[in-house]
Image (tube, rainbow, N blue to C red):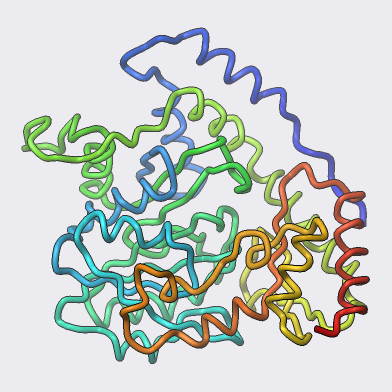
Length: 368
């Protein structure tokens, strides 16, 4: 299949030139406000708040939901440590929940066993752009009185059952780091239907100023996690070509998975029924001996991937969390057996075909 062309980048240069021409401007200029209005419209929510990173979005969102010392928050072990870091900063405790290998979704039976009187929220993580069942998530949170803070860092453009990733719960948090489909080099944003959450997050990102209605500026300790105006300009330009960027990534992923249909020991992981996946990373189940070593070997052969290149492991096995209870074996099984190939919009057919040829050749020869 032929890839669509890379969406026009001219607007990127034009938008950035305008903002640079307005600097220095201690007020921050209009770019961030315009980005927030356009994000809210694009995702169909009342409020968007732009911040310096996806981690900062989670930090602000958790604070806005009242998470603090002594609180427990359910988090999938199938995630990166960046999801959990804001909990430690707020004095809260992550409680790791397993995932179901067949679906990649949360294991809600395991989650129910881990709910206590201190549990305040749940953070579903849409890893690789894949989205769990929104109805099950909402029902579980409602039953246990939990806020839902979605980590949708990789899921811009994914929908399931007609619901956009990042709009299912109280807050949805996104990253715009380089490599994401909607990127600005670095940055993030959160989406919410609640004005009070948006006002808290806006104050939290800027040392509690402007403060929410009824509160004094600088009356609380907060953070400096504002999105720099040049990065806001880049994000704004990319948001205007988001539909094309999502379609490009989906086509790249289809192209690579199609090229690997006959590769031995590799089975494409299809999205769920009624899930319109953004194709963030081509996903294949590795049915070969020592599958994690195979992923690491591919990384050495020039095929970037989550476990081989970035050493992704279940978060509950990280050194700072190994004092926890029984490890989440489903999450470990998923990561050990999943080849998640890292893509960018600049990966051409030639690049994808080279990846496919390397993967197929190495799979055929793999005996370790």
